[in-house]
Image (cartoon, rainbow, N blue to C red; front, top):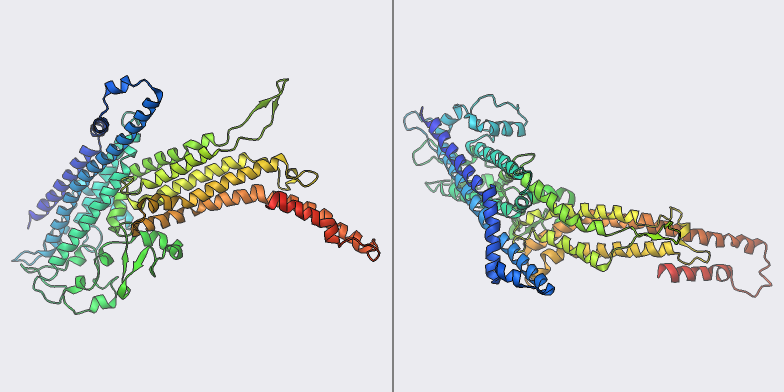
Length: 572
């Protein structure tokens, strides 16, 4: 027993070294360079294009076609190579993590035959090695405890365990390695590194799902070796304690309801509850259902879950079925986990989305014969510019599609928020491109209530914003649903709904811009013209002798022509 703590921590350290070795082989400049070179060479081989052939092409159209085909083939090969490399890294990390979890489980279930002392209790009394002090500080700070580690052992009644210490330390080292890679050669590799995020996120989520399945299989297989109904049965060698307590699942009745806790149908609590209801936390429902439960509910469920017979709710995609704590720790925050990679990816995505904005509203300049510059209205975007923006949004959204972009559908929300930020910048540029007619809108109308040049310009701008709003509304369906029709996928439909909800602020921003800067001033100007005509009503009512007049009523005489002009020139 005296050598047990050192042996256990040595095994955990060895698994941590294995995970760190896999990360060093994946997140390093040499592997990225080899990955890019391999993708380019394979793309050329697939197209049967060599450097000599590329040099021999002289026609501009042939060069353009060859270049576009080679670029598409290279991007396709890069996506495959990144997915393979990320899967290899995730597989190594998953194996190391499962070994630590299995060690924790064995220690929790076994005890010394003579002293009847539980092995995990023996390990928990030993101090935590210095190599895992950073992980201990992070866990204690997340639980609201002291920041300093204090050199104590493991408290088996908290989330501080062998597996949690291994996982947190692995994520800390991973974040440090990614940061060093981003700073390599003054950020030369930032574009290549940021492009890894979709594949890394998808591989990591798949790896966590496999770990969870293995955990469930292991717990179910060792829950009750004697086949009895008690979920607190002893192990084969005796002296064991229920896994659910030591693995941080708490009381077996918590979260499962009275039926799950008291059911005596056999097999313990594992036989009474679905696996997802006690091992996997629903990130989708936790983050979205509180604000958008009505919009996300489908089939009688809530929080993005579908209702099944018997009243049980099951999540319909990997967006809502992940290991809650481990996944959140891996995503990280600050400089831990995958967060530096995610931050870099979002910055690159934002740059790609905002790239066309600089060409949307160029300032037009006209000079008189005397060389004096005249004030001219800005040039409005063309259909080509709007199509480019729509294509950019669709391409960024498809990155979250595992088939099209190699990512993971849970990325839909963050990419949609980037699109909202881009629309906000576009609205700011569109506001500066208006004619600045003022709040009263007097410059919008001529003396005969006809539309002025300023109003015509602003109405064209409103049409541009409306076209962009319509395309933005269709973007989720075009990105996730239409490419797979006539087939139907609940996962892609869920992603489209999530994207639609995240894009709502952009729709509201464009609507508010048109209403405030164009429609409200126009309505004020029209109301002013109508009110000046309505003031004649008093003259017609009190000063004119209407009994001897054969003309029509007041509205027909004074307002009908004005109403017809407003309806013809403005409303229609």
